[in-house]
Length: 432
Image (spheres, rainbow, N blue to C red):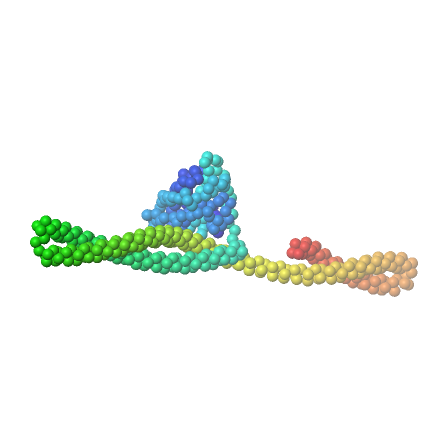
């Protein structure tokens, strides 16, 4: 992640308090400068001071696009963090951070706390490190969240099906209750009709009893009429008994229907409560699903950023391997030079011994030449032979001097090479 301080000034947070009261919503005001091009996937998070990656946020909100986001101008924006998603009073310091769609920090606020009384703010250094282990951990978390997301989706589908089944049962129960209500209404209407019929029969019976009493008072004008009236009275009483029995049966059926209607109402209330619980569960599941989707998107951003960092690390690793190979080549060359130096040292030692021998020979030749010169002064006869011998000795001496000078030049060259190669053991120690 890029932690260049210049990118942190692309979004400026305004009016940040030193502390906020727990349990209250927090209003976050910020200014988007002309250097930043907003994106619909930008977001604002609350981070605990000391965070290392954008995955360390406590909560976040998607940053709304300003109305003039297509123009290269500043824009004043504002978001509100609800109290339910904010930290409690824990004594820790937090800060607002604006994260763009690539997972880069574009702005950070001064630290603040969640407590009853405000305190002074502190500065915090921000360190962002992405390693291969974190990349693998991110991939594992993303895979686990995807699996949980699929499980949540299956759970939501199951809850929807169960909700549809309950709603179907509820509709059937409502239809049954309506049918029972219509049956009760019909039975009540039929009872009213039976009641009216019974009242009409009673009225007719009272009239017949009155007529019978009048007939008895008049002296029983006609026995035949009395018998007819008696038969009619018996028939009316039988009809009344039947009507009473029918009314009792209708009353019992009415009571039974009332009980069934009450049970249906209770079951309907239970189904309504279950429906309310299912709707709450559905709303909560949808909210959790949205949170998981947002979390998955953020992790996807972090994963892409980590993959880019991984590519950079892979390039650095290749460069390091190339450097190791070059170091190995240097070591092999150093070994070769060291062996050559040791051989040259041996040769140099031999040359020095030969030079000393030649110097001794030169000294002996000079002593011999001096003695020959003295002898030449004494003996003229030996002058010619001594001169010839001396010339030979001089020629040999000159030849030896020339050889000695050649060896000295070679010795100087070897000495210079030795001085140059004396650095190699130190370099070799550094390489090892």
